Image 1 (cartoon, rainbow, N blue to C red):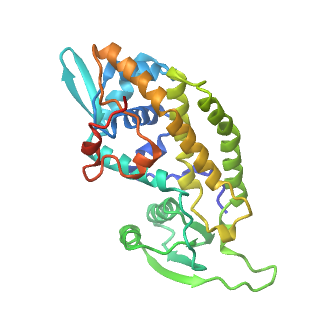
Image 2: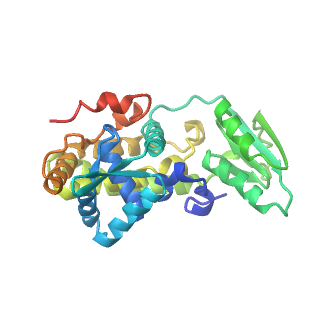
Length: 328
């Protein structure tokens, strides 16, 4: 059983497409979140001076902020342009597409319980011991896609293997591999093990409980208008950075297999209430910084909601359509 904080198992070295999740809490992750949360729906440009000031509100020095921006540009996450004597940055097309897709997954996570047919997908593989990198790549791929190790070389998921997932698995397949969709039969002995035991359900529930304990009270403060300015931006950024770990930690195990009152749905409600409830005050604060540093208003600075994120901001023309729909 993999504990929820075995991060080397949870987070694969899978490239820039997974950068936002893997870098949460780091200066680069912070920069990506700030640019994404306030420009993805419009593909707007964020003045570098404004971004540096926003970094400062999180305790990042100006020098470290500028270095982070430079590194993100060097990695192809951000692209820059000159605006007179100043510079501005936005997400590259590829980064915007990856982040929009990731946003859809976060928004959809836990929204509607999936029906379960009572069967498990089993991936059984054997990789020679002298091929450690290939074996690690298979494990990382399976972990990222919600599988858990049931026995050595046997990984399980309650969800069917889609055509896209099948193609992705082919890319990392090495040695010998078989895939089955089968029903678990309980032997009714102490030796019988249920596939759900491959996950640390208690640990996942504890993380949900901690999230609810930290953020449920914030919802009341938002309703009372008690969070605004820099505090709104910080809280909105932090709730995103915390909540977006859950799609990795919780593989959407069927509710039939989980204890009563599983806290996934409540956590999603609190996340949406905080993220959406702070959209307006956070947007106005960021716009104020941009106007001050850039010498004029930037209506393309726009905070999106969870529903808009779920609609696929930045995908299939969604960003263009949203450009003129700025908040008043």
